[in-house]
Image 1 (cartoon, rainbow, N blue to C red):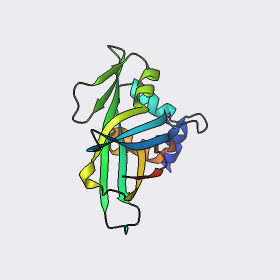
Image 2 (image 1 turned 120 degrees about the vertical axis):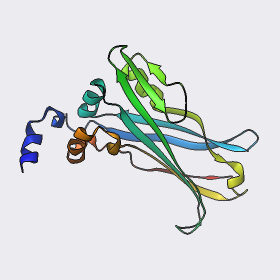
Image 3 (image 1 turned 45 degrees about the vertical axis):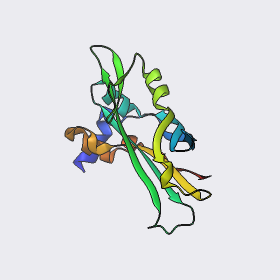
Image 4 (image 1 turned 120 degrees about the horizontal axis):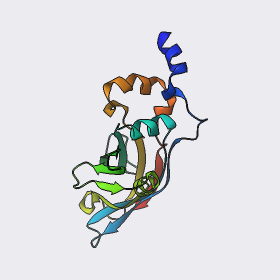
Length: 183
């Protein structure tokens, strides 16, 4: 009860209506290198809530996870999962240099941006990200793919996690975007 009362007065709980959330507008896999590799292209609309933007601008890095699943279309739920990839990255703001950064796992160096809008534009435009090797797919087979993205609340600093769990403005996840393709 005390937590609920504190949340009502917390500046972190104040958000404008529901003008936030993530939405995948387009996603596709296409063959590359004579069909040896499949690449992901996607367009994602990232709209962070005011509490998330405030935390970012106050030095809290936000971790996001893209989840891509590819499965044979007529397979049982436990069979023929081709890939279940998670692409993790963090976004940070450095007040001293006034730069925003995207830090991808296992990719050096970080990408720097001078504005928040430039950061969002770059994050939302995924081009030619390698995800599936062609030998994992059978010629002529139909596959189902799904892509989703979400904020990883578990990666937030420990004092901020309880607030993030109870405040819906921190539950930033896209619905799954689904499509089919044939190799």
